[in-house]
Image: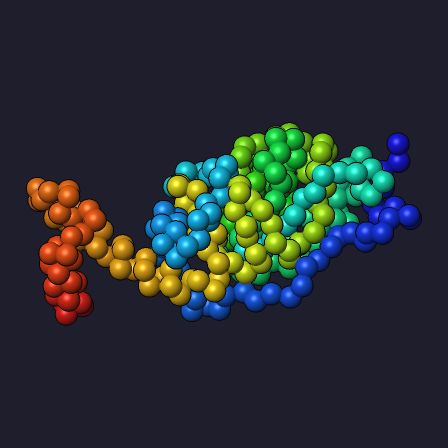
Length: 262
């Protein structure tokens, strides 16, 4: 069978690129850096966002963290009259996988919809290296990567469901679109959303909600520092985690004193 990409009778022209979108500015990006995924997830839940956790991908290298702007890539099931992966990289270089690489800006986190597939190596060493050289901050794949050892050696933070020897379109999926909404691990990610990923996994923070998340997270992280101090001196858990009205007042006094010493 001859490989096809944009077959003559196809109503679809690949790759598909979504509409325009806005990355967070530098100040927003900097302000988000101290937030961990667990805190982001809990604060979003309080704001009514019940599904922000990207279920499935785990860190390729434990201990790494990334906070960045979502650059999205969508894989779709192969259909041989439209596109398949029989010609390997020679076809892939004309797909959304190659196209999205040319749009990378510093601080981007590439978020890839791949349905948890065990048979599509969505990113390999060469593309990860190019992504990193262009300033890409990290990669979240709802599926597999290839060349895992080489990517680990690059030091770029990656979250995936594992590794495979397959190239991206070798099996069941095909790089279809970029700059589009993607579904990853049960969570919706829009281009420009914040991605917060660490050992607890990736969390998607809607860009419009990031100021509220930052404000709530700062308070939460501060009182957890306070609570740890009190618990380490023998205080009762029920008094300090979470804070009661009385210990909240104690915390506010502690915070004011700490601020005055800065």
